[in-house]
Image (tube, rainbow over all chains, first blue to last red; front, side, top):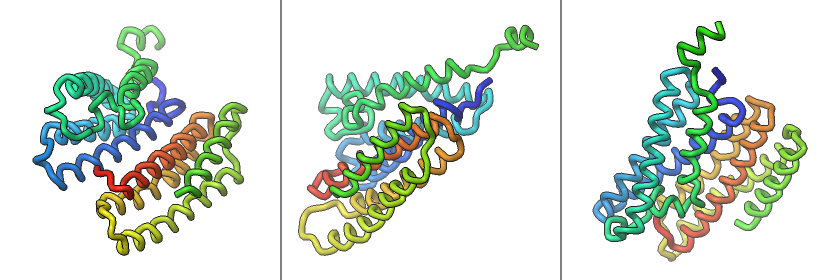
Length: 138
Length: 116
């Protein structure tokens, strides 16, 4: 199995790291400044931040368990950005202020929309050998 | 503000050339990144002083956290890149330089009164 944080993974870890910091910082500032303004949007910001943190950490750690958790994190991220993105267009009242995922990550050059796809593609390329193939190659 | 953007754009261009030629970053590029970092440090000082003197409606906490946050991108990117001297390592520098540009633009927007 290839190292999760080398080669293209190295770039991915850095990008995820940037987003982890950006989303964490933003959600904390938003929740700290005026949480009542858009509680749903701000909570989702915090959720996004946690997801990015988990993904970054798992990519850094590597290993089978991290790989599994990373797949989960990227999947939640994909579902999150799609659902929040759609909702932010459909129900603007729910999102009076912008978050990382609203409008499919428009405020971040749509990178939040692209990132989970890239993440899942990378995880697919680095998936741990299943028991079957491991025996075959042994 | 302008200096950071110009220098970062030059760095980004230089990194793009390296990426195309599949070469790793050498001393000239790291020197340029160091210069940007120094400019960012100056920006932190000047920005903080201007913030304390301005009468504009700028979100102080947000502004300073961006001034400080922007300092972290290049050093972390550089170390993360140096740990793997490959094309991917060089690409990390490109992302770092791009991050500086993005944060600098946000910084300008915040100075103009934008919120979180």
